[in-house]
Image (cartoon, rainbow, N blue to C red):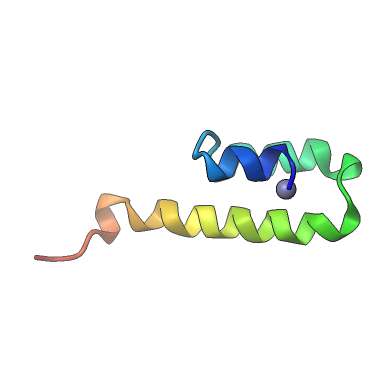
Length: 59
Ligand SMILES: [Zn+2]
C-alpha cells in the first residue's frame, strides 16, 4: 500500500489525480507495487465510468 492506494480506497482521489500522483511517485515506489497501483487506477476509472449518466441503466 502507498498513499495513492489509501486515497483511492477512501475515494479521496480520482483516477486522474492518482495517475498524476503515480507519475510523480513512481520512482519512490517499489517496482513490484507499480502494476498494483495501475490496476487500482484502472478499476477506479471503470467504477467512475459506471456512474456517469451515459452509462446509467435504462429503466
Ligand atoms: Zn499503493
